[in-house]
Image 1 (cartoon, each protein chain N blue to C red):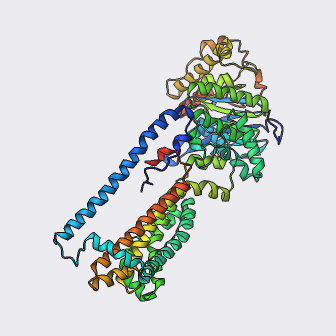
Image 2: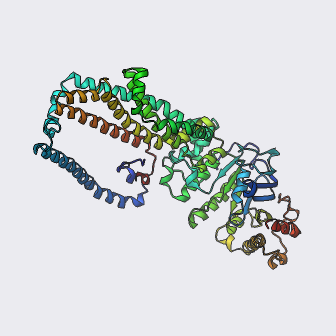
Image 3: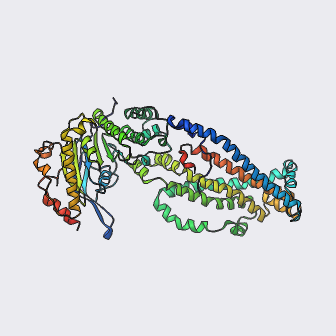
Length: 287
Length: 318
């Protein structure tokens, strides 16, 4: 659950006291090519995997209908990008995922923060939350199908249920992370409750809340696609199944790659948001 | 220096602790930390409470700040029973790293308590800058706490206490975790702030030299459970200097006395039986001890003739 990223604080050296600047600057200058080399290595790794994939496909170890080569898969994209069906599928999936995610955040974050602030609320809700979050959402899918029918609302609901617990628990955990020392200082300066919530509990909980949101964001896309695969609801998952059943393996893989790209973009976005929100952190927090 | 909006004159009202006991835990785990402790701090006084570690100094200070309530006995501020933190009382804790908000810039940290009091932003910032200036940190308002050294962070915590404009400042081992040089600087800073603002300061420390150097009066606490062992007036005058004051024979005499008393109290607490009061104490004509504690000395259990009382507390442990 560590809040990751290797390069949270490129500006840190400038903020340090001048006495240290010479050493830091030199260090950074030496570090810059290092970062470029790292990027090259990472790209090379990706390339190597693509090559192995191409080799496997070319060697026909697996039939071409099960595993088309990367060229065939990526070759699908120019056509797909011009196809409104593709964008409709991406839109449907994102719609379900984002709506469910936002609903989960709107419900989970405030509820978690409030219950986390008051020990009694946290303790009395713990059993219920622990039981509820133990249900695998996908296993409950038939129940939802029965109750809500095969509708976009059902997809959103399932996404919401899958996302709300990590968000809620991380928010609760974050609210409890206010140290006794700070709580006592705020008591002694008689900081009123609402102000304390806004400017002490909230910032203190932010790192943890961000972790919860990031987990939930990835989960939301995963669950939305899962629901589409298992039901007849439109979206990327549905297209994957359609393409696969129609023998268009390359097309199916192209949709899978699309899903991966969406997941990766979400990660990048949340890292960026985290970096903006947690600018106050000292660089020691980076690892 | 600083303009202050005084509520009830420079040092506020007097802080009176009467027969306070503090017990933690219940049943078999019950642990009595403080027993029958009485103390009086008058407006404008600088009182240092000194005692060995584990003597319940922090517990006492938390009681004085209204953060916790004594199990029995009363603490009154200006005649009013203190049951929760009071607007007239600011606290500076030992753990400066833990008490500053890491997500707020230094200026906002200092101004934050004022926001809770409904002070407008411009006024808050003005006061914060003024108080940062008073502690010698005029140019760091835009930094985050982690960008400052330990001593500087503790100055920020002091500035926050000053910005709150409470006439009473409680300090819990405030210089305990900074390096020796910063410590001297902070001690002198505290003395000069107190002189210019006329505030009341109660400082809790385990450092005898520090207590004698800073205080108008040193209250020695000790024993198990803790009570007031002695209470002596420091006659070193208002102007003190790290080099000359510490070399002054009156300073060294006082330090010797305090140390002797603490050792004695510890020996008793450890069950080695009552020891005879140290020679140096009885020989001294005791010019450093105000007869009858006119300055507002401890109100109970501190007189010289209270040997039996201390024996009693010593026995209570076993």
